Amino acid sequence: MSASAMPAALTDERRRRLGRRAQLLAGASVAYNVVEAIVAIGAGTVAGSAALVGFGLDSTVEVSSGLVILWQFRHPMPESRERRALRLIALSFFALAAYVTVDSFRTLLRSGEPETSIVGIVLAAASLAIMPALSWAQRRTGRALASGSVVADSKQTLLCSYLSAVLLGGLLLNAAFGWHWADPLAALVIAAVAVREGIEAWKGDDCCG
Image (cartoon, rainbow, N blue to C red):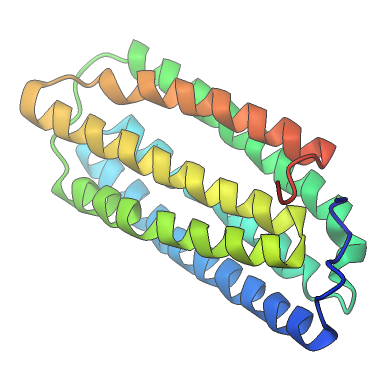
């Protein structure tokens, strides 16, 4: 099924309802990630944690993905913007991968160890609890709409969940054992996943399988 194809059983009214749901979920993602970015960057600056600051900057990339969905579904025929939306989300995947890679190496090579950040630990735990549920709702909506862009946005949200887990593990390991190198190593794996998802989104191959 192509990214712009709609299931035969999908009525116009249900399509509109699903479109409104997609916008609400994207809006919730944008709002949460704005708050997440502010808190993470502030806490990371205070603690001297490059990983925490990087997590906050990653949240701005997540915001861009949500804004793409809001832009797409503002159109009376959002499926006409499907291809451009997928390309824009693919670019956000690539931006995420590039930043995480650079920040990971910078964190590994920097001198000194960051201080323990209780605020960062709480934020990472909250994101780890919230983001998987949001990603599931986005993916379910995207599949119902046969919208590859909404499904791709759900994968962005899921990657945010993975980064939350990496950040939480890194902050806890640093607090307990001083292992400040743990989270950037794991983040490099996530960067590789982001590149793969970006390629799939760019090709439009990841709609609803």
